[in-house]
Image 1 (cartoon, rainbow, N blue to C red):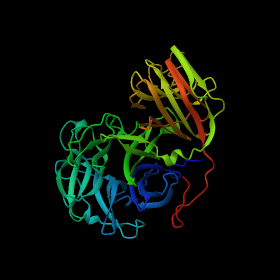
Image 2 (tube, helix red, strand yellow):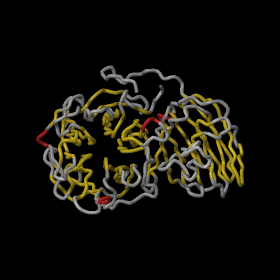
Image 3 (cartoon, rainbow, N blue to C red):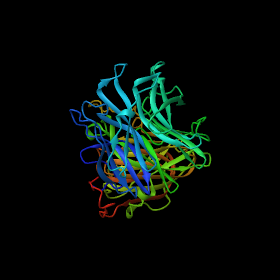
Image 4 (cartoon, rainbow, N blue to C red):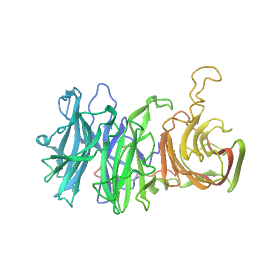
Length: 488
């Protein structure tokens, strides 16, 4: 199975990623989710990559502390370097250790490495829990960074106020330190009184703009960002504030050579079926961010991934017109596509067109397929599929009142004229990008083969380009002899 550009460990899944870039190499610590019963604890593992395409698993990094330890589950945190020593700050949680609110206690723990992140020494004396005014069961995902202007270290912590409306107690708490050992509470870093919690927070500066990134599961289960000219805000809400859709979560970033990459996971679905519930953890996926002049961000897969699709397998003649002023029309390419492919389409959308887009793994007549649908009248991209779920044996017992796959939509301005839809499919993974700026990731489980097509509904579209490409066979190229290579 060729999953270049994505990573999932054998027999397990990727949870939250803690990225660290050093000397041009990305070190991607991640929560190694085994989904075993009984639970065996969640450790950190480490994956490294130089090219964002080939990922090398180096094995466990921070093991579970054991069934009686505060860090039976080693949850999300961050990495910093000071005086040549690597420090990790992470969340410790044990379901059998309860806080004063009767829920599993969450703590911030500290470990250091003096051998290049190969081994870690825990420092239990540095462990601390929620400060006054916060719930003890929500004190996690510490993000530590250096504030050179203030001459100290700041730690952002996912927290919840102890009192207030249940759905709006989320707050990014803050602690400060001068030595990375002793931490003192400070005023909240961000307190919007919105969402249950702001998970996996991070903050960074890029070309004079500051960015605050966090994930929330109370409304949309997605990763969001804010932008400001100052570390201390005020934080502006971009018009399109999310990185991706429902299936892409807990994304955190690292930079290299002036480029910034976000590392998140595409959620799996229960039973590996299209109707299965979304699950926690999945497959590592990388998005690259680019800046607009007003500080807002565009997102798309990195070019390193796109360039792996270097073998043409089909296409459509340029300037093919699909027109159906009050109906529907499609055109399906002949021949099934491989399990890993890239489809690039450019549409010239006529005014007043209701919808157009691409069919993936379609039947020869286009009646059954996964559908990426551009809706100019609603300015959105949605993911759909046919056939939809049936609730009974009668013709009318079909989810015809469900307009698309719920939660899989992305706002995007679709004025009349040219728009690009670029889609990467690798096995059951799908990442679609509109105009190099708006991404939508999902899973494709039930339909495993079929063709690519284009369509229009109630309008006219000129297909200026539709090219489908595949990959040439991959050559194994270990990153380094002293790293354990594990199949991804």
